[in-house]
Length: 379
Ligand SMILES: Cc1ncc(COP(=O)(O)O)c(C=O)c1O
Image 1 (cartoon, rainbow, N blue to C red):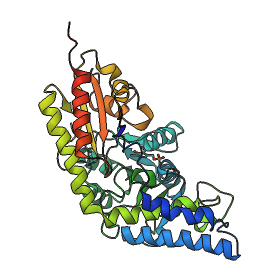
Image 2: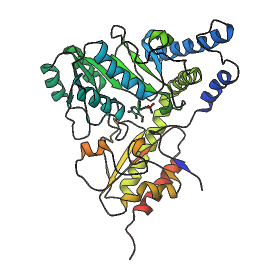
Image 3: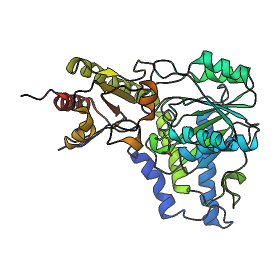
Image 4: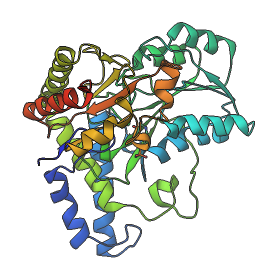
């Protein structure tokens, strides 16, 4: 049986070009980047070259990029350190952020370090900009943290509109771009964003490496202390293999971006159309229009008693997909995103997330299996 992978929002397959870029740093260039000898200098050069590559692709300065161990760390740093170091007293965020933001906001709120304001959402999960303006008007020393695209729904926020509102009211703006980095272009000279976050494993890089972009002028102090690495921004011997791989994954992603968008968007549209035809009672969660994240499609089935085992049954048939975020895959329970947008609603939800390694034949097979799994039992 061919196993088909449609869980690319949870993580992606490594690109062979990325693997090739990693190998020399596993085999030969293993020096500690802080060491002064040639081995160390070679490793250091790899890190700085990677930083320049990332900065060039995002049109920012290399010094504005801090490599981290993952997207979660970068999100934690943006929120925690802006409260600690930049005098932030209010955090405006939404109830459908990834836990890497939501739980940090809750923690900061519960410990009294900041007051958290939960933004109202539009029915498709986009930020309610009128409410955002109301909250910005009423509060000073604000950090707004709103994700670019939701990892479960694919709903995408307008970063320019949100960032311009933040500028108007003198608030800082952090956006979790973990699902969109490597999938959309970002020009950070133009975009009104102070902090953004990235994770390499969402665009065919390895797990365990990411970065925080920190606009010059909004400079945080380190969250991890005990070493001068990352230009004194993050202590700890650098994940050199991961950092080199992240830059390579970004280079490949942006080199092939237009082709990649066209192909993957085509797969999503094909699946959407096929599901509508095969299972008329299915609806799509969040925004599934052409404006939404082209790698994610989230489907709802009214409760018919079969939904509970849906992800499990799909897996038995060789199709890997998810019930929501990675932490809740394998189960339809526990999606704070679905619960926030559709409170109390029953039924089953399933997320397919696509990559350049998927094919139309795989989409057709997944829909055929889904139709069979969801078919009413014959009595
Ligand atoms: C939107 C979003 N933010 C943050 C993260 C966390 O990234 P990482 O797995 O690198 O910690 C994820 C991963 O699922 C995500 O989808």
